[in-house]
Amino acid sequence: ATPTAIMVGTGLGAKRGVLFKNAMALESSARIRVVVMDKTGTLTKGEPEVTDVVVGDTLPDDEFLRLVAAVERESEHPLAEAIVRHADGLGLAPMRAEHFENVPGHGAVARVKGRKVVVGNRRLLEREGVEPGKLASRRQEMAEGGRTAVMVAVDNTVAGVIGIADAARDTSPAAIATLHELGVEVVMLTGDNAATAERIAQRLGIDTVIAEVLPGDKAAKIAELQAGSRKVAMVGDGVNDAPALAQADLGIAIGAGTDVAIETADVVLMRSDPLDVPAALHIGRGTLRKMR
Ligand code: ADP
Ligand code: MG
Image (tube, rainbow, N blue to C red; front, side, top):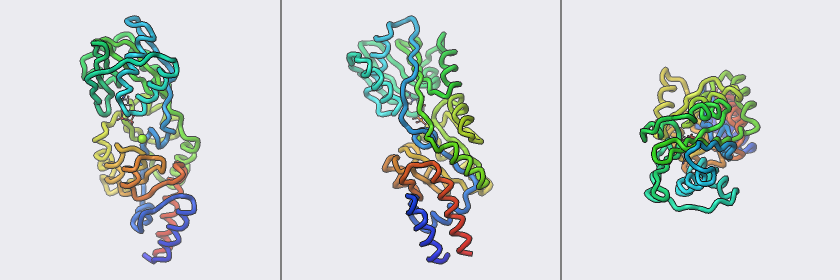
């Protein structure tokens, strides 16, 4: 490896805010055949907003939202924040949750005014032994529209579904198209449900979707993709993504992401622009050519 080629590559990257942490990062960039992208906060803006609130006939609408917001106020999940913002925006008086339990990759459970409130995905309701009930078709509709459907059960009966949308970053489709031009396969990795992820992937032109992955299992999914010695890059922003970034042959962190992701990654995209992913691979390939 000639130091000059490394310096040129690093400099080219720095000019557009693509920070290669070392020479190995540049070399690895040249050899990537698969790019795995986290959905929330990487391909999307990571600014979820409540779009639909469907309440069953067991509770009045306001009461329903107050119960859900009480639980979600205790959670730090971005979906929880969106729900709390929505309830606050409606001016609903806050209620206090007790015995709060965060269930990673699933949602949250707590007691509010003596009632047991379960807020999360279908898997969480199954875990809690709640029957999907009448609102299952509404959940499915939301998911097929590319929204995340948050299910709510009160005292073990489904009480409503909340639809949450997170807009794609403007340059996500172009980034994926450019990766394809470079001959790279693009995979979306997410904890979100399969129907929601498939719909978003279809809009963005993504080849493969790996959905409903638990936070602790993301790294193992990367390892599976590495079988047959294919070089795999992972692009992510969250605390959950750090082990996968470390497992990948090249970890790429979104600059707007969490400190843990940025520290773990080999490359940091300061502009948080998905188009800088193909740019990084392009710079790596140019550098490697000069090194031979
Ligand atoms: P991701 O951030 O990729 O969606 P997570 O593993 O954090 O993945 O969560 C997976 C899924 O679990 C979410 O898509 C959501 O359906 C559900 N979930 C997790 N936490 C919460 C919460 N606090 N409120 C509602 N739903 C939640
Ligand atoms: Mg994310």
